[in-house]
Structures are given as C-alpha cells and as structure tokens.
Length: 327
Image (cartoon, rainbow, N blue to C red):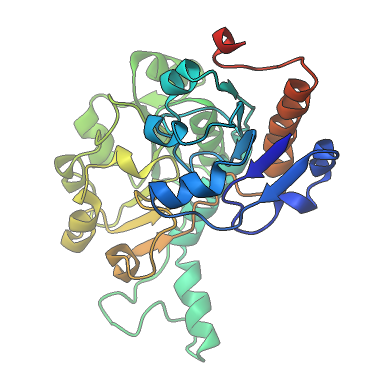
C-alpha cells in the first residue's frame, strides 16, 4: 500500500522499533502540516492509507471528496471529532482506531504542576543570564515558589488520567477535590477522595485546578469567565486536555485580571501555536507544545497499533475498524 504518515514534526516515527511493521509498503512521512484544503488535498491524493497522529490533521467531508485513492485511515489513539466518520463511511473509507495510555499525559500534568508551582522555568532561564534566584526582574512578578503539601488539588473529571493525577496529589500530601458528572464524583469518593459540594466551591477552594474532561459539544467552553473569576489570586490552572474546554478568550482575560494567578497549558486552539500568540506574552503562563502523548513509550504504543491495523488491512484481515459496514 501507499501510505502517508502525517504531521511527524520531530521526524520521530522512522526511528521507532515498530516502524518495521510497514516494511514492504511505500511510506512517506510528512514532517510539517499542509495549510489550506487545496494544498492538503494535493499532498494526500496519491495515498491508499493515512496514519493520523492524534488530531493534528482534520479530515472533513470536503477533503475526503478529493482523495479518490484513500481506502484506510489508521488513527493513533481514538477518533475524536477530527474525522468526518459519516463522510468516510459513505465513501467506503475504513477507519481503524488504535490504543492509548493515560500515563504520559498524567505525568506531564504533574510536571507542569511542579514546574509552575516552583517557578522552575523562569528561575532556570534567568540563571543562564547570570541572574541568581530571581523569577523576574519585574518586582511585582518576582515571587517565591511554593510547595504542594497541604494545598487543594482540584480535578475536573475522574477518568483514567484524572485518577492518576489524584494519586500523585495524594502522594504529595495534597487534599484532592473532584468535580464532574455523578459517576466521576462517586468513583472519586469510593477511592477515598472528596467530591466538591458545588461547582462554585470547586473553583473557589482550588490551589491547583487541573482539567481532564473529554471535548464534546457538551463540554466545549464549559469553563467560563465567571468560573475563573472565583479562583484564588495565587491559584494555578492546568490544562493538558483540550483548549476548547475553556470559553474563548476567558483565560487570557482572567490571567490579566489576576484570577487565577498562574496557568500551565499544553493545548491550544491553534496548533502549532504561532510564536506571536498573545498567550506567550503572558508572564504568568507556562506553555508547552502539546507534549502530553509525545513521548517514546507512548509513540511505540500508539504507532505499533496503527501500523498493525494497516498490515492487517493490507492482508485482507482488517482489525479495529470503527465503521465495519464499509467492509
């Protein structure tokens, strides 16, 4: 098969052990994203199969119409709204889903919490400039970092990632407070954690608040400006899930207003995030370039499943097909 692997920004995929699964196929790895429907259609038109790295590229009905050779979309992880499944099915294009793991995103969440709480990045950057034990040369921003023990870790949604983060918080001596649907709250209490008395209390009591919801129509913009305004002036908001969970523009305004006092983000509405983004000019924001699943063990797991699905499809034994009616 003629296979395209999209958006491998670091050209990491060919170095994976699992890459050899595609031996015998014609494979092209693209290291940059095509901008615009026309450019993307021209790039992808020759291929029988596409390997998507999570949601880095969206496949709309209009785009699929321009890909006459496409037979298979092999997804790393699960399809999450970036592929028009109905359109693919109508055009006879099979979609194979992969597997995932909560470990890497949960560990990154904790790394961001630690780094932001102790101001590690500005301390380290200033040290390179010969400035000792200084967060900022602006006296208003040059505060001390702080420890986590005894403080409240608020987790919205107690799923696989939320559970791991809650466990890390407990290990660090934090009070863990959970909000979300009834199932999330009940599961958290069964594990010995607290459920917030109300949404308002959840935001008001948080010293660190971490979002772990799935993005869907019901959760898009679910964190509002009024929610953020309830947070403490020294609280930290962490988002390693989806940027669209927060009402558009609300976090920027909240940080400028000082509630919450800090944020740590790994996800953005526009990715890759342009270097002139206003977000990057906010001194109380720690930003990383969507690294939640970008990690060696995760890549081996994700791509092995995606490549095995391609090999099985090529051999006439398709596996993990989301839309089996096309077969």
